Amino acid sequence: MATPQNTSNEQLSTTPINITTYKLNTYPNPFDKILTVNTSIPNNVKNANFIIYDVLGKELKRIKVPTGESIIEIKGEELQQGLLYYVLILDDKIIENGKVVYQKK
Image (cartoon, rainbow, N blue to C red; front, side, top):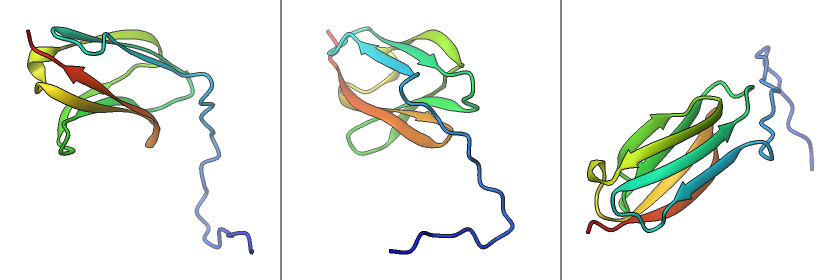
């Protein structure tokens, strides 16, 4: 099998993301008032986003995540009840995804 070659003059980015150096923790799960998101994003990442979707794929919340350590608190009232999906995107690459349940009491 031939190796694909870049035949254009375009320079390709070679800045790798070391996925062993990021951290993402979401808790509690299920949650009723506040979802806490702990992150640690490497300093070489230029763009980091945490996005929450409903079960139909509609984006409900997008949060720009700073590099370094951070704690993000998301109020349940800003979301829909039920099963929610989330993704962590670093420099336009999905690095982690998961699901949480919002149960309003």
